[in-house]
Structures are given as C-alpha cells and as structure tokens.
Image (cartoon, rainbow, N blue to C red; front, side, top):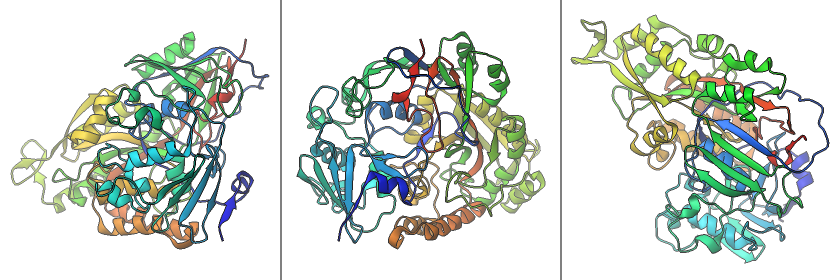
Amino acid sequence: MARQLSRREFLAGAAGLGAAAVLGACAPGAPAPQPGPAELKPSYGGTVIYGTFADAQVLNPILSTDVPSSEIIARVFDSVVDIDPNNGQPIPNLAERWQISSDGLTYTFYFNKNVKWHDGKPFTAHDVKFTIEAILDPKTQTVRKNLFELVKGAKDRIAGKAAETEGVKVVDDYTLQITLTETYCPFLVSSMSFLRPLPRHLLEGKDINTDEFNRRPVGTGPFKFKEWVKDDHITLVRNENWWKRSGGPYIDEFIRKVVKDATVVVAQLKTGEVDIGGIEPKDLAEIQREAHLDVRKYLGLGYTYIGYNLARPPLDDRRVRLALTHAVDMKSVVEKVLLGEGVQMAGHMPPASWAYNPNIKPPEYNPQRARQLLEQAGFKPGPDGIMQRDGKPLKFTLYTNSGNKVREQVATIAKDQWKQIGVDVDIQFQEWNAFLDRLNKTRDFDMVIVGWSLGVDPGPAFKSIFHSGEIEGGFNFVSYRNPEVDRLIEEGLRVPGCDQEKRKQIYWRVQEIMAEDPPYNFGFAANTIIAVNRRVQGVNPTVFGGTFYNIHDWYVTK
C-alpha cells in the first residue's frame, strides 16, 4: 500500500539528509546563528545589494556547478521539493504532496495548480518531465545525470538509446510519476530538491547548452530576472505574482554585485555601498566596530581543501599525497589565518553532518614523516635541496581563485612548508570563472585550493566527487580511484529501508579509507561570517538553509 507524506509528517518525522554539491568561491563553515536586533513589522520596498567577489557562470539550474550561479538560480527557480532550513528534512514546495509505493520505488508527485512562470504561462507536470529528460539527454552538458540514473530507463536515455525515459510519466497536468529500478535513499532530499523545473514552452527544441535562456532565465520563483552585466552585477526584481505569497517578496530588487577583492567588500559594507557580504576573520573586529552593521555566523556543510590531481604522476602515489598533507600545518592555518573561526578537517564530512566520523583525527603536521614518505616513494634530495626521482625534481603548480585572501594565504603558507621537505611549488591565482574552467574542462593542474558546499545527504556528493565513474563528466576532477570506495559509495545510496545508522557506518568506513588513501588535504571548515546592514531585517542564516533561503522574507526599514 502506498503511503502519503504530508508537510506535517515530514516536519515531525525522521528523514535522511542530502543534496548535490557545488563548487564554492568562498569557504562555508562552523558555529550557530547569531540573533539580530528585534525585528520590525515587514514592509514592501527597497533594494538589497549583496557584494561578493565571484560572478555567476550560467543561470540554468541543470547546467550550473558553482555557488555564485546557484545563489541567483535559487531565487529565480523554485524546487520540486524544498529542504527545511532548520532540520534538513524534505518538505513540500512545487510538489504540494507525494506518495511513495510500498516497495519504495515509485514516487507520485502532486503539483500546486496555481503556479505560473514569470511570463504568465501555467506551470505543469509536463515542465518537470521535460527538465528530467533534458538532464538525461546525452547532448546536455550537465554533471547531474547521476541524480536520476536509477530512474527506470535512464541508462538507455543517457546512452542515446531511447527518446524518453520510461520511468517518468505524466499522469495528468499536475501529477507526475517517477519509478526507480532500485532503492535510492537520497531521492527526495537530493534529486528532487535539486530539481528546479525549466519552462518547456521556452526551451523545447532548443539547444539547452547554448540558448540565451541561460543568461536570461524565466522561472517560477520569488524573483524575476532583470539584467546581467558580466563581471559587474545581476539584478533581480520582485515577482508580484509569486504563488507562495500574494505580492511576492518584500524587497523590490536584489542586486548581486561583483566586488573582486574581499577588502573592497569590507570597505563598501562600511560606506553602505553594499548591504550584505561575506567577510574574512581578520576583518571581523573592524566590522563589529561599525554601528550600522550586524554580524551573523553559522555552521555550514562545506570545507576548503587542497586537491591533488591523481592523473599527474607522482600524485598517483598515495605516499606522495600523504607527504604533502603532513607537510602543511593546517591546525596553525585555522589558528592564525582563520583566527580560530573554523576547525581543521579530518575528512570529507564536516562536523555538522550526520555522517561525520569523530574517530578520525586530522592529519598532524609532521615534516619529518613527510620527508620519510617521499623517501619511501623513491625520492632523494637533489643538489638544490629539491627532492628528485629518476633525475626529475619534485615540482608542482598550485592553482586557486584570486580575490579570496584566505586561500591566497593558505597557498603561500603551504608553498613555504612544502619547500622545507624539498618540494618546489609554483602558485597561480586565477579569476573565478577561468579557474572553474580549469577544474571542470581542461583539468590542467597539479594541485588546487578550492571548496565544496555540500548538501545535507552525504551520498550524492560522495558519489559525484569521489566515485571513479564520475571522473568523466562529473565532479571527480582529481581523478580519484579506489574500488573499495566505489563499492561503499554505491552501497550507501541503496541501503534497504534507508536505515540512517547503517548508512552512517558505511560513510564512516569511506572516511577511514580516505584517511589512508587521500584525494585531498581536507583542509578546514571555516565559519561563514556575514555582515548585514541593520536597515535590512529578516536575515537569519542556518546550517541547512544557508544565507539566502528566506530572502523573500527580508525587508528594508524606512
């Protein structure tokens, strides 16, 4: 017998956590939300300007891979299923309810009948099917196919053997049925919360990879797209006809302003040129002295890491990767660069995750051990002190995005400490979008410093980031391969009954393996610190919601 899950049941009951990963231009992080001043009565009007140093790449939800793009996409497009910002559980959104068959394989979604696209056309189940088909279309350049690969017929669709996906059926204009081939625990909290439908009437028959829609999107969300001046700003305006609230959001406009240097963000927060912005620990005291600014800190599901490209020998040798990891004093980075606003990471799961393994300790700073590992790998000091093997010096190039002062400092510290064990590293700073192209397209790097912003369920991110099947077309741009990790990742997604304790034990084991066979130096989870002009009320970041989840409730005081 099918069981119907209401909004109240989801809020009260237990659920697995999850969602897709995106690349972060700045690091997410660690303590609880800070209370703001007493809230006033909301009123309509005003503009909120958000200052940040990275521009978006693409404004199509199935093509984007980065946080800057997602910050706009999530305001323009509504998701099928939402995530409760306080507990990470799935709750109704475009789908006002759903049923799950007794075998856990068939999901029937019932959509709100009052939703309209920004151009006034009605939203229907046909749009949702169109979007899933677009994701699975072999011609679509998306890393998200894995979120729907267990839908019946998806593999044939991805391979180009079928024109449509057998397991995705429109029952009527407001009902969609999706059938899986086997259990997929994060389906609701990951796949369907990621899914932000596209308008079939605007994109059917178009090349979804290149269409102008990707720069001028039309969604169903609380804000409508107005303009995008590349590397300068994106402006969104209130959707007065938003289906969730008559009149739409309180603020008239939301402007995402590109400010390419973090120190300039601080200056513009102080002058009032921007209303909200992320700040670095070194600027916290300065911001707190400004009477018109308030500060929020929150624990995020993300971290900043040093990634090793295993496709580039000798980084395919775990001893070399372990040596590079032990050579960097990441504990000191947390204390001196982050000024204590964060924690050193022991593995892929941040402390806020239910899959975090507390038994794994962060790698210790041990230059002597690092040098021993290099010697075990066959390296010996050359005449200039640089370790070499077969006459080839141990030299690497490290890339990270410019404008992020924390990452720039970490790169400089790591370079100096690697030099102490005989490793020569050249640092290259790149503009964010060029840096993303290097990671996702050319993969022309030895090492990188970047970050992950993770979803609430660990499964999809583990698969898309570390499974060997995701090296081509996925987020595994470091080319990590470990057959046991692959097996465990797949097992964790398909645990019978989706028992969270059983899944947790699987992910604990994955983290134990990665501690000995690391794809990364897992670096640190930094506190997300947000400065907000006190004229903007309603900003209340959470672990699962982030900063902007409730932007429709923000308002500007007169």
